Length: 224
Image 1 (cartoon, rainbow, N blue to C red):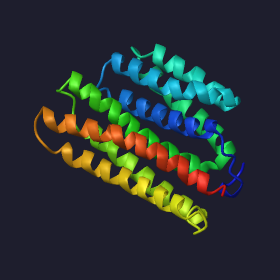
Image 2 (tube, helix red, strand yellow):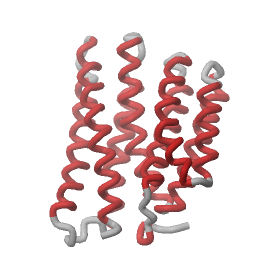
Image 3 (spheres, one colour):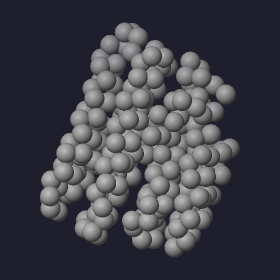
Image 4 (spheres, rainbow, N blue to C red):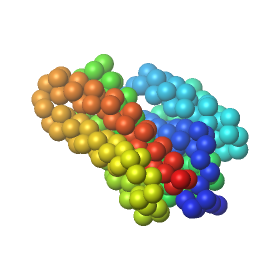
């Protein structure tokens, strides 16, 4: 299995990490039993958008895509659905690990999956305001931990070696801005009323975009 020093940078890598993080996040949310099957259908379909393109890379990504479909179809049966999504996440992690090593696959998946699932669940709160906010905070916290771990891992491996100039600072800026956005999500969720979750969901939209940029650019820098 490769390490970050011989990272294989392809679109399939980023998409596999994204699909892995979302699949595991959906499995966890389903296991919490705080939403109905409609959320699993929507979230599972979103994960499949990334996972289906990653499947063009072959191997374990194909198995992951099949398991995502199974988990989505089993949305009304909580335990089998959660198991299928969890297995899909593992399959995509194995696929990503073959290109970047296990640690980088896990940190990237945690960063992207945490913020993406928080954003999707935040939308569901707007449908069902009785849903507990602790679930949103936990996903948000997972995304922050993933981003910081990914930043530290890639920096320690050589992504911030001082040879790419502005790109390195752009990477650090994207990662830092993503963390700030997700801290903003956390504090927005402390505000009572509908508006707090609306603000948190809007911030998480931006965090998804900046996190994708940070995770991708960090891996590009390792190849320069």
